[in-house]
Amino acid sequence: MSKKNELIQSVKGTRDLLPGETPLWQRVEEEARRVFEAYNFREIRTPILEQTALFARSVGSDTDIVTKEMYTFEDRDSESLTLRPEATASVVRAYIEHGLYNEGGVHKLYYFGPMFRRERPQKGRYRQFYQIGAEVLGSDHPTIDTEVLEMLVLLLERLGLKEFKLLLNSVGCPKCRPEYLKKLRHALDAVKTKLCTDCQRRAQTNPLRVLDCKVEADQPVIEKLPYILDHLCSECRQHFECVTGELDERGVAYEIVPRLVRGLDYYTRTTFEITSGLLGAQNAMLGGGRYDGLSEMLGGPPAPGFGFAIGQDRLVLTVEESAALKMKAPLAVYVAWMGEAAREPAVRLACQLRREGISTEISFQQMKLKKSLGIANKLQARHTIIIGEEEVASGHYQLKDMETGEQRAVDAVQLVAAIKEKLGETFQSGRAPSSQAK
Ligand code: HAM
Image 1 (cartoon, protein in one colour):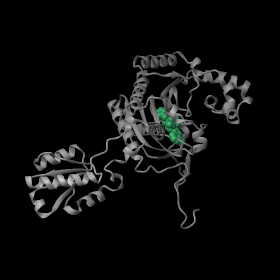
Image 2: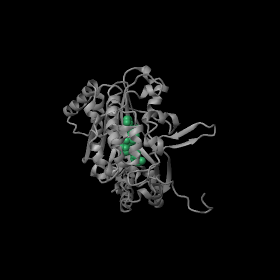
Image 3: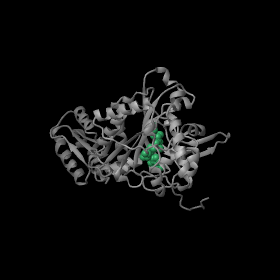
Image 4: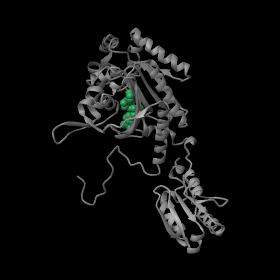
């Protein structure tokens, strides 16, 4: 309990994104929207709160996420609720709940939003973090996997990223995996005493997870274990070959990493991650894969799926330095003047505003108000100052807020101060805060 008057701070592992940072976040979101919509994806928004069973059933009851990391609580009516640790399960739930499958065809959905996992906070790892994700539901065609991977690479390139690696694997299907798991268990029986205690437990409960272990001392043992990629059934092998073949055709570079099993249980066939050397220890910028049985697991009809989630916090960390993201500062003021008598005061005012560091534009020649406002709109000016002969005579100019449309007369002497006040701190030098992002 905090004492009265004691400073209350944000919860551990959560953070405030201040106005100096948000333009970059917005820019990343805008680019993602643009790229996703070019590939015909549409936005879906699902609740942050879900029934706990949704994640236990889909992500897997023996995964780190479900056993250690979820924010789960009992609601006042004793229902167990969880702050979503990821959104794939929610998207599939919504797809089933609203009968989207009745529309037939393939559904391409994308989402943005906060996720919650009680992990040990460090750079790039938070308890409230943000994902940008996309899911394709309704087909198991390998071209979907490739098209989505192509889309992801395009997005990263558009954001100016170069140093990233696409790591690819297949984790098989319910037909070939049980046979492989038998072999893996057998191999683990002989060596499990040499592994960490977590892996000794996983060897019993969820042996595939052993491959995902990050403990240094376990690595020499894990490297000698059988990999599922060598034990795929013919359908899974063919699927994987189609995906890699099409990636080659599209010129998307990848590296096959047979140990890549991912930390969630719903995956079948293709799994992947994109890592960035710029991220340090938490180098997975995004991850995803195919989940062909998930809809059935959640009580829905067969609806094969493929998708990914980008860790937006990590993506922003990697693009922060990128020159491609230096954003153009929006224009603060447009000065529109009408009538010869207005020219000189208008020019003087523009000069004064610019001397104050407020980005200002003014027409070289006089034009009708409608045309001036059209130009101001096109330049995305925040404010327009209108000076006609009447305004010159009264000494009060019209100040129009281009966002709200609100317009009022302001004493010419007070105009610069009034503009400064309207623009506030973030625009003090006439620049958007984004331009300061390093
Ligand atoms: P995930 O690998 O658990 O997959 O998370 C995706 C990405 O979210 C990670 O690569 C990482 O960038 C970011 N992330 C995860 N945990 C944290 C954290 N504590 N702090 C900061 N960033 C984090 C999924 O969530 C799946 N739903 C992806 C998916 C979609 N698979 C199919 N469709």
